Length: 315
Image (cartoon, rainbow, N blue to C red; front, side, top):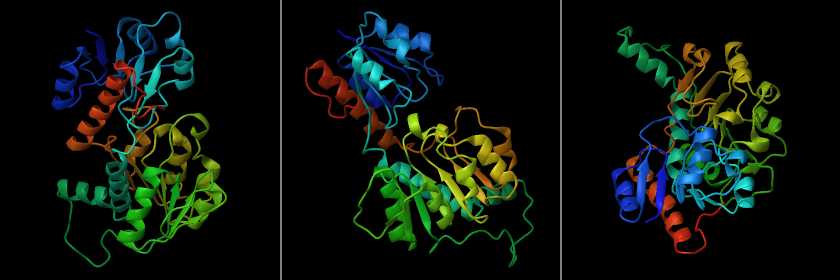
C-alpha cells in the first residue's frame, strides 16, 4: 500500500476516502512543513497532499525522490516550486473552480464590512459602548453604485465582479496583464495605477508569488482616492504590508479589508490597532462543503497519478 502524507487535518470525509486506498499519515498541526521537513517527506512518501505554508522549495526536489505527486489543497501553489518539481519528475496539481464562489463571497464580505464599518460597530456593541442610534452615527461608505476595480480578472476576479455588477449595480473596471473579455459590462484599463485612481473600491484576486510579489506597493496605493477602500483576498505577499499600513495611518486611503497576510498567522500589530481595517483569518474557502470538495479534488489527482492517468488539475 502506498504511503500518503496529508500535511493538515482535512474534513472526515476526505480522510476516510484517503485511508480507504493508502497508508495515510496526517500532521495534526497548523504549522507548515519547513524546507527540511518537506525534503524529508519527499524521500519517505509516495504522494503528498500539501497546502499553504508548506515550503516545497527547489532544494526539496534534490536527489532520489520517492514522492511522485504533490496534490495541493488550494488554488494557490506559490509555496511549491513547480518548475523544480517538473524537472524532478514530480507532478503537481491544485484545486481551482471549487474555491471560486466561496472566495468571491469573502470578497463581498470584506467590501461590505469595511465600507459599512461592521467590524468597528460590532466591537462597539460587544464592549457595551454603543450610546444608541443617531443620524450621524458611524457613517460609512455606501456600496451600491460605487465603482469597483478588480486586480486580476481570473475566475475569482470575475466572480467578485459579477456580484458587484449584478447585485450592487456597481460599474466594474479591471486590470489584467493580458487582454481579457468578459460577458458582462466591465472596462479593462491599461495600467494598475489607472485602475487604482478610477475606482472607489479595489479588490485584489491575483495569484501570489513571482512577479505578483508586492504588486501592490507604495506607488500603486498613492494613486488611490483618499476615500478608497482596499480589499485583498489573493495572497498576503501580493501586498507590501508596510506600504499599506503607511497609507492607512496617514489617511492616504480610507480603509482596508484583509483575508490574507504576508507571514500568516502573524498579523502586524499596526493592522490590529486601526479601526478602519477589517481582519479575517484566511476564511476564503472556509465552508465545509467547499473544503470537502477541495479535498476530494486533491485526492482525485492523486488517484489519477496512481493509476497512470493525466492529472485533471495539473499545474
